[in-house]
Image 1 (cartoon, rainbow, N blue to C red):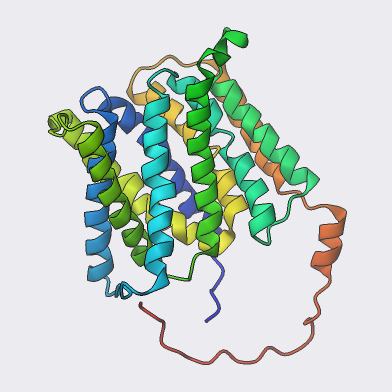
Image 2 (cartoon, rainbow, N blue to C red):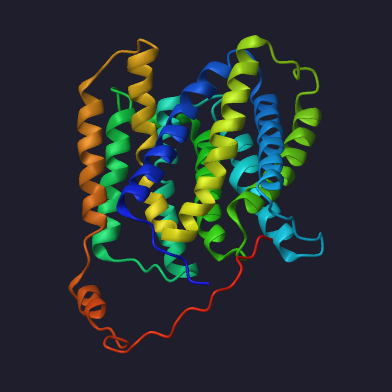
Amino acid sequence: MEKSPLSRPAMIALCAALILIWGSAFNFVGVAVDHISPFWLTAWRLLVGATVLTLYALITGHRFPTFRDPRWIWYSVLGMTGAVIPFLLMAKGQLSVDSGLTAVIVGAMPLITIVLAHFFTDEKLTLFKVFGFFIGFLGVAVLFMPDQFGLGLTGNWKSQLIILCGAFCYAGTTVAAKRAPKTPAPVGSAIMMIAASIAGLTAALILDPGGHVPNAPALTMILLLGIGSTSVGTILYLFFIDRVGPSSMARLNYFPPVLSVIIGVWFLSEPFTWKLIVAFIVIIIGVMVSRISSPSERRMGSIRPDRGRPRPPIPAVRPDRD
């Protein structure tokens, strides 16, 4: 059955929800790592996310596919590449790379996404799209780049490369999710987190067997992360990609770091700098440029071979709840 397009208010609300959920996650993680190791933070938030998503899928009447169904393989792999592997890579890389430079490196993720989407989906690169995404990346760089810029920043290049590999995992997951077998977002999200939680718990037990008990502040952050970005965020993420594609999701990824800085200034008394305003303006310009259609695209868009033909009625069918 053909999907009904999202209205503009619904699309704005969806984008705002994702930006809020992902932007606040940076701050929650920043608080949590002061009280619990990154490995156990990852394991606990994935376990909370898997529990919440599984219960939500069952309560809302969805049925999980049988274990022979290829969707288990697809979404389990997405759980590895979209959660476990990048979480662990980021944790490893940030042992010697500060959060600001990490944000700049991860800012390359949308650029990687549009390149992968060009080769593996029907979303092709255009000059305006590449230029717009590059401008957006510059916006993130303006916001987080250290004041003293120089070759010394490349001293930890191995750790920076590890973080870049994490960004590549996020980009690859965004593209692969578009090609995954059609599955209701709650079910696909639950399968992703079930597989990810098993792998994350195994990694934590092996790599950090002694740091698994969270204190009260860590437990609060774990619940906020597990319910927020790991549960609700994953459902909205899959739904968004299915409706609008990887490139639009990539554009959205420039805004959560900006919101994270705003939250830090507003709630955590972090200093306000001119970089925040400049970065936001630059990112907005980049997103606007990336949405400009080339003349050839406009010509193709004006050619509608089915224009004027009556559309056949859509038969009433019962939605598949699997």
